Image 1 (cartoon, helix red, strand yellow):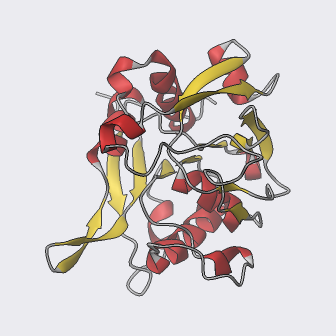
Image 2: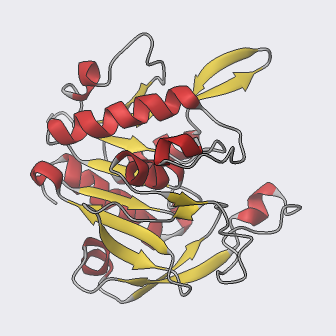
Length: 246
């Protein structure tokens, strides 16, 4: 039997009881393993004890997931305190991962925080008002909305003609869930817009640094993936990338 590719998935530092644990929500791992048809390993965000370059060469690609924590504003040159929670060790590990994955010519995919992280790692900035600005759609459901209902908050995105997503979906728009308080401020120069919300906010981007595909989205394709062909398509793109077919 031909071995399946192996995907590295970044972990977060989360409090479990009174201790800190390396954690990945199951929905990211199961959606990737099922629809990208891959095996997976969790990459701990413990930069004091390991370097990203030690593990990237043993992986076929990396996924940076969403999580409740935010990138520290100082990472993108903003002196303001910003609003937590923060996970500084994940920030450090993700920057190392982005650099190591690109250097190793491996695919890099991102979802939500992962989408924001890659932009920051490559020199872009974030804005923190995507559900508070009068000039933007509300990109997050009201604060009092229960957890499952948050993912029912949706809006369309326009796909860039000729882009990876427009080619994969063979249409010009998608309806996506929207669960983020922060988003792209300035897009990193090396990234190409793949999708925008009706208010102009960048919702997906791509690149081919050193030839390998990079593709990240602000929405959550891992949520209820079994019920959405569109979400499955994102992970099938990941599977193709891991096999050198994208």
